[in-house]
Amino acid sequence: MFILCVRRFPPKPGNERGKKMTKENVPSFLHLTAAQARALAKRMPEEEILYELADLYKMFADSTRVRILSALRVQELCVLDLAALLGISQSALSHQLRILKQAKLIKCRREGKIICYSLADEHVESIFRQGLDHVRE
Amino acid sequence: MFILCVRRFPPKPGNERGKKMTKENVPSFLHLTAAQARALAKRMPEEEILYELADLYKMFADSTRVRILSALRVQELCVLDLAALLGISQSALSHQLRILKQAKLIKCRREGKIICYSLADEHVESIFRQGLDHVRE
DNA sequence: ACTATATATGAACATTTGTTCATATGTTTA
DNA sequence: TAAACATATGAACAAATGTTCATATATAGT
Image (tube, rainbow over all chains, first blue to last red; front, side, top):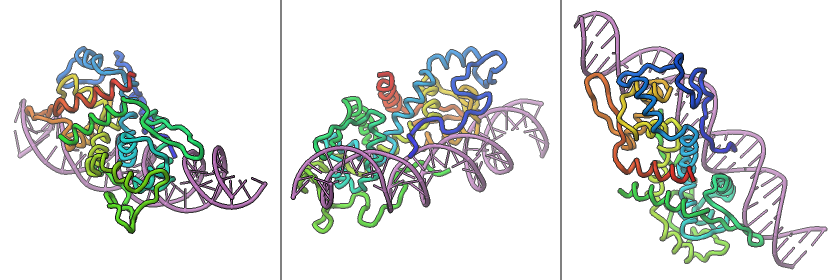
């Protein structure tokens, strides 16, 4: 399985990510002067940060993963209990757990034969709740 | 283009979304009793809410859309200026604007020949900032 | 009305992604 | 050590998604 990552399409020539606006490469704006556009761009986060942001939200952008996280919000769980609780296969769950772990949204600890998963930190909880608040209006 | 939506795979028989745990259909837990599992499930948000949550985050889960939103955070912009600023085609941008608009994350107003887009409300800003804080550590 | 300008959209296409199936790895117990 | 149990993983596959291309729609200026 591919690891979820950003920038799926190879950048087109002349349109590379983070490309600076040089004199030869000034896009033509409609209502903005080039200077205004530069000022605007300066007020945006760095490209790299935005790509990481998309990657972060990608973790929450799948219903299986959201359900996993929402269960782990309540309490630590081992893989088979989590699978039974959510009604998904052990394999599918394991794949998703790996993705969430690589993104550092969850952590695990071994206890003999079983492995218990839990949320990595409070940040995960706060991101989750923020979205929840919005969805609930 | 398909509209971004959740639940991509048709539910398998016996594994439908929101399926109740009836007597005939009790998953076997490892460390949890059925009663504990029910109590845990009760502390999770409703299934429907979780699916909507995934849909919401899906909007932020693409780098192009994140870049669009991060530009509109700074100021209202018309389509061509936004395309020039981000270095993407007018068509690709227009498709993404439609998706963001349907999700009510942005709004637009016509001014003669051009159409200006802006963030729909403060909630979008707060979700954006929340993620940004996490990414920046 | 005609042309230019600004934006939207449908279809096709390639890539990404989540699941399933089979199998591997690791741990405990007999 | 063998068998059973708990979890992980690679490959294949189907579905979803974002882009491009061509074209449609809408408004303004002449």
